[in-house]
Length: 426
Image 1 (cartoon, one colour):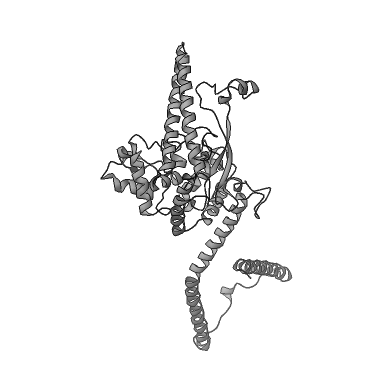
Image 2: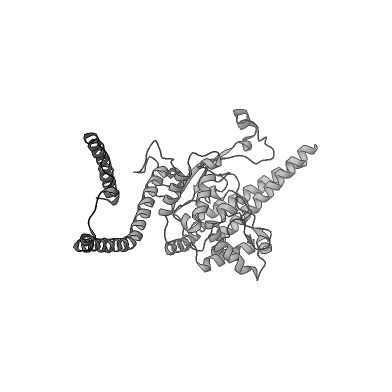
C-alpha cells in the first residue's frame, strides 16, 4: 500500500469520526433537552485526592506523551528527506511519462491519438535524430516573392519554385548536455523560426501547450540524455566516420569517390551558372534589370566560392573543420541542415561555411575581432564550452542572447580547441 493510499485512508477515517461525533452530540442533545450543569460549577476532587496517586498518573501519562512526541519528531526529521525525495522522483517520473506521450508518434508505444504531438516524426522514436520535410523558398533576385506557384511559373521560371528539402532534426540525446533547462524551455515554447521546429507554447501565441505541458516535454528530453564520456567518444568517432545522423560528415564520407566527384561537378556547374549570369547581366539596359542581375551575379559568385571550398574540404579536411560542421554549422551556416554531400546541387545552394544563419557570421575575421588573440583565447574557449547567460557580456562588447549552446560536456578540450583554430581561419 502506497503512502498516498495510507494518508487517504487516515483522512477518511478522521472525517468519518468527526461526523459521527457531531451526530452523536446532536442525538444526545435531543434526548436530554435539559441543560447540564456547567463543568466549572460542578464540585471537583479535593486537594488530598488531586495531589496523590491521581496526580502521579497524570504526570506519568504526560511524560509518556512527551516521549512519544519527541520520538515522533525525531522519526519525522529522519524520514522526511527520504519522503520528499521519493515524492519529487515520483512527480518527475509522472512528468516524464506525460512528456513521452506528447513526444510520441504512431510508432511509439506511448502514442495517444488525442494527446501526442508527433515530435518523434522528426526527432526519431528514440529521440536520436531524424529528418523533417521542409519547404525552402527561392532567393533568386529574378523572382517575385509574392508570385503564386503555378504551372506557368514552373514553365517560365523554374528557378523560382520552392523546393522541398529533408531538414536534419537534431538528436535530443545531447540536448541536456548542450542546453540548460531554461534554454530547452525557450526552444520548445518559441520554436526555431525559419526551420521545421514549430513553437509549442501558448506563450508564443502559436502553440498549444501551457507551462506544465512544456515542462513535461523538457523533463522527457532531459531523460533521453546520454553521458559526457559517451558524447565525447561519439564526437571523436564521427570525425572518422559519421553514419549515425543527417547533417553529419566524417573523413570516410569525404574521401568517398562519389562525394568527391559530386563536389567536382558542383564546381563546374557553379562556374557555368556564373558565366551565364554575367552574360545576362551584360544584356541588361534598364536600371532595375542591372540591379537585379548584379545581385544574381553576386549570388553565383558566392555559389562558386562555396562549391570550391567544399571541393577543398573533401580533399583535405581538418579535424576542427569536421567538428565545426558536425556541431556548429547547423546554426552558423545557411542550408547545412539539408545539405547532401552526395548531391550538393540537389537542394538550394548552401551558404559560406560559418557565414551565419540562425547564429552570427563567423567569417571575415569576426571571431578574431570579437575574441582578439592571444588574450581572447580563454574567453573564446569559455564561450564555446560554457556559454554565457542571456544579457551578459562576452568578448569585445558582445551581449549574449542566451541561445548559444555549450559544448563542454559534449566535446573534449582538444576538440574545442580544434574548432577554435578553424573558426579563426575563416
